[in-house]
Length: 119
Image 1 (cartoon, one colour):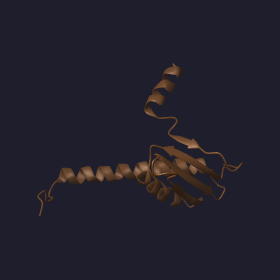
Image 2 (cartoon, one colour):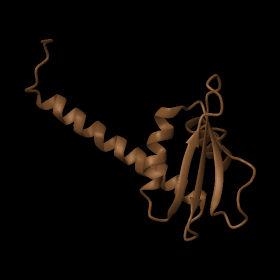
Image 3 (cartoon, rainbow, N blue to C red):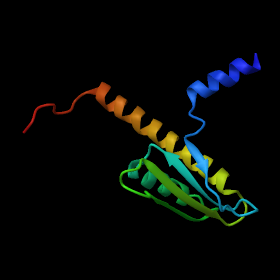
């Protein structure tokens, strides 16, 4: 039964999507990650959400080369949480924000009362 759950989880999530890059601090307060198949769209939004966390000292991202779909993100915390925890919190907060925006959009579309013709 446990093997089936692992297989199902692997189908739902790409376990190789995010990689921890070499060079993380021993205490876990600073680390770099690589996110595959992503670009500035996620990078800037995720950097913004992570930097809103008062426990985060620094967060920056880069695209190593324009022809590669890779996003590198560096997180440094003050020490109360790890960089991995900061990344998880940032991803969760960004997903929650996207859900709220989607719900509000659907609500406004359903309510109608908007112009739908070009000027």
